[in-house]
Length: 450
Image (cartoon, rainbow, N blue to C red; front, side, top):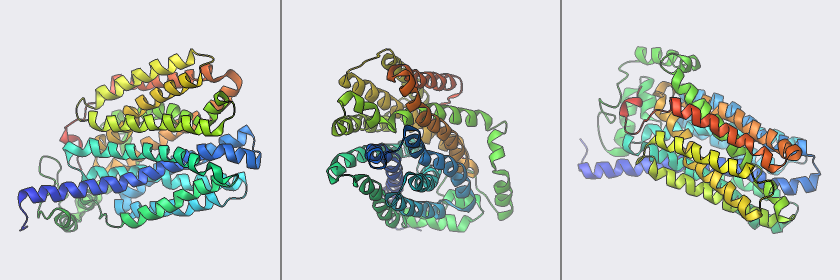
């Protein structure tokens, strides 16, 4: 038996849970950085390569298209082959393709490298969130998963700060911006090797003894870590094999899962249209209002991104206090109000524009932007957790692609104010689906099961 006291065992378990959450969050930091840094790099790219608006949209959307496929298949691979194995392979792709993106010689090479980078960025969402959910105690699960979303926002903010710092380098500054992502990924890859395989995944695949050894090693507690009220055991390999065969994408549309699948896909889609439409073009949106001052556009973008960090930080604490359902509903309501106000202002001042965009991003991240990680991981069972999260995430990428590709064309033809109705409209969709389908999963341990 363990020589540690019960108090020491709890501290050991909590320390490890925090470590996993931070290392998973480091991956999400890279996601936020790599997705957002292209927005910072685009002004310099446009000048150096003289690319058209259409090509600009393709460059901006290339990583998101890759994320669609990465989310769709990354979760399935994590369910099939293990969280840890994919956890490490995935980050290796960050290093390789972020570096290639920095070394590209024309727009189409950049599109290709960003698309391949997007595959690994997308895969990291279900992989990192599922391993965090499966190592975390129920009472901290929402907070620790949201910590990952907070890291994403910090990464996005850091991308804009990087733009400010590296802008004086000159025409090649964008290469250093993109290349920095490869360096940060390499550091994270080295640190991640400490994380073992998820005991839940091991149990699901009949590896009971190995699962118990993992838990014994990280908490010094022998025997059953999960507890009979939180999850059942997979007693033998034949039962594990049966469960693996049943855990397919088709099960996401079974009578037991269809409500959760529709809800997660729809609210995440609605969030992604607005968030990525704004986030990927913030410097470009602001620059006309700054009379072409790129640094001022970067500063304004940094302020908006910082409010995104604040939204995720607030959400991390309120989600366990007020609950998931009220938080997502009222944040969608707030987004509708703010975006409608922006749509009704044809010529806002730069200060008003930054204020309203900041409020929209804060509310988006406070609600659907952090719950897009929490809800799928709490609603889908272990055998489907990464697959379900990945599938819902892939549908959200369709929304992101629409926001990124359609919004600049709408602005060009209709103006900023009229185009903002697109974002207000999808927020209404998010609100409606949340009112009818959003469950309250706070403290309901039975929703995390094998």
